[in-house]
Amino acid sequence: MIIKRVMAAICTLLFCFIPLTCPAENEDLFQLSCGQSERLEYRCTLPDGGLILTGADDPFEPGKDACAKVMCLNADRTIRWEYTDFNRNGYTAAELATVLPDGTIAVVFEDYPEKIFVKFFTPEGKLARKKMNLKPKRGETGQVYALAPSFFMVFDSVDRGPDGYFGYDYETVLYNWSGRETARYNGLIVRDGYGFLVSESDALVTYGKEELFGGHAKIMRLDETNGSILWETEPDYQLPGADQAELIHIVQAEDGGYIGWLREGRPSVDGLSSEYSYFLVRFDADGRLLWAKNSESLNCNGSVMNLCTYNGKIVMECGEADDESWSKGSPLRFLWMDLDGNETGTVELSLKPEDFWMMQDSLPENDGIYRFPWIGINQLIPMADGVWAFATFYIAEKEEAGQGIGLPLEKSEIVMIRIPEI
Image 1: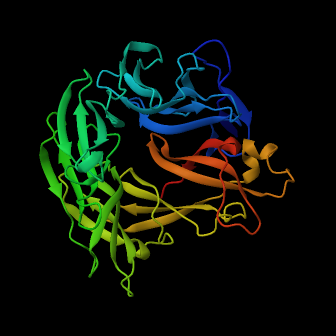
Image 2: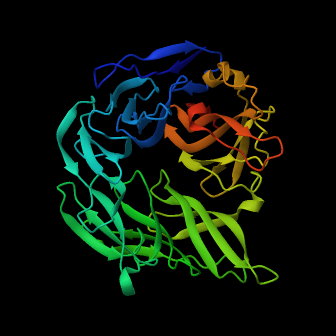
């Protein structure tokens, strides 16, 4: 078997087309960084099934700056092209990305807050048109929150009080790709509320909650051309005595609906704090709540983790209570369900820590710090050949008697893991 890995060559060119492969024994593991000092995040899927990753080459050395990087993968996860700034323009990271209707790829490059630009690329990785300056105007502090095929979104704090006090009030602004403002409304992403945007969709669907402290959860669709409300849903509380709720980590399903997590809180017995419960929820394409299942009833340790839909099913990551469980031989676990919320089975994926490039020379240090391999799944990505977990493999650190663990970025590796389907 071959694990295909890609390493960016440090060269004088902006584009490098030199993929490297390293022999290994597990076809379900695809290692992208091969021990290089890279930070990458999955951003979007191209129409042909390829992936766009953005981040930075980061030497993690004093006096040496990171430089912005974009990596485009083919549908089989081999490299298609790379773009690295190599500090010639002063960009320290590439961030958000989307694919425009004509196939152009838009990517935010920044050295925040001094420089924030969108660069445009052809599907082949060549610069497509003049870059767009998104740096806030003098006196503004707006931040670019999201890119979508027909709009991009910026939010800003709003002065609602005396002496320039900003408090918790926000304003969200929509722009088209000509740079023209098309809508402005009160609220942090959610109109008259607080929350997030469903990513990888041209539909402007936001979710979160109606109030910052207390109140119901909310999901709504807005018209991306003028910000008007097309539909909105505030689900009833699922628990007796609940006085606060919010939707978190909502993704679009293959049928056009939405799945994710609902968190509800109610006063604790002593009345001094709140206790929380989580529900897996599914909405149809018009925002109607179809069902809600308490996480405690799922065969997934009651964990609230990453999820997506694939081939008419839901797949979700199952967490482990012990930070070191995987390093001690416990498999990665994933729960499969149908779209009605019925469990179809759990799969276990055993990966050997010694298969990872970072294990070659990272653990033998003897400096009083306890080190062990740890893997964190950032996102589940549906692809043509199955669901893949985009993850980071770390050499985690902690003191023998310390609390929690440290995850040094300079001791990490970006990987993709295939999840068997049930």
